[in-house]
Length: 115
Length: 111
Image (cartoon, rainbow over all chains, first blue to last red; front, side, top):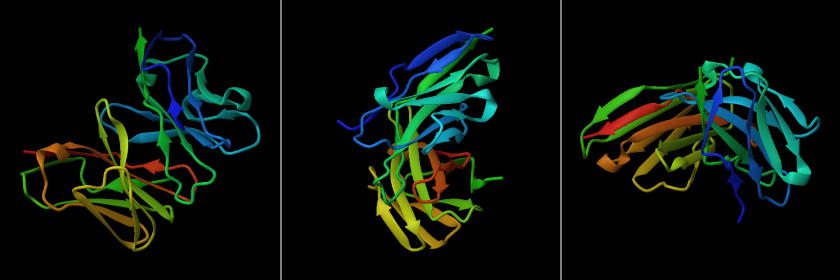
C-alpha cells in the first residue's frame, strides 16, 4: 500500500550525541519530501524540504536530511543533539501528481533527550 | 517571515454549541487546510480549500463545515459541537504542492 513510514515510534538519545530519524515512502514516483517538528502543545514547524536537485538538504536548527532514491528514504540527521530538540518529528510527502498539495504524514517519532 | 495565525489557542465550549475556528495566513497561498490531531491517531485532514469559495472534503469531514470567503482566511465550523470533537485543531497553508506552514493550533474542549 502507498504510505509514509517512520519505523521508530520513540527514540532516546543523550545530549551531544548524533541523531538519525528514519523515513521511508512507498510511492511509484518520487514525491516532494518534508520534515516537521512539533513541540508539546504547539503547531508543526517546517524543518526542511526536498523537491529536486542536491540530495542532501540543509534545514533549520542544524538539521539535515538525505534523499536516497534507491532506498525510498529521506532520513533526518543532526550531528549533536540539544535538550531543546526533544519533540515529535513528522516525515511527510506530497505526491507530484497531486493537484491539491495534500500532505501525507508518517506516524511520527518522539525524541527524548537525556542530560 | 511566514505567518499563519489561529483565532484562539484554547477554547472551551458546551455540547450543542456552534463553534467557529478561524485561520489567517499572510503569504498569499492558494491552499489552506484544517487538521485535527489526537493521541495515537496522528494528524487527520478535515477539509481543505484550493481557492476562494472552493473546498474539498478531507478524510474526516463529518460534523464539520468550512468557509473561505477571502484568500487569506479559512474558517472551520462545528455546527453542533460534541464531546468527540475535543481535540487539537491545526490550520496550514501552502502554494500548490509546496510546503505547508502551520499555525500554533487551537486546543478545543467540548464539555
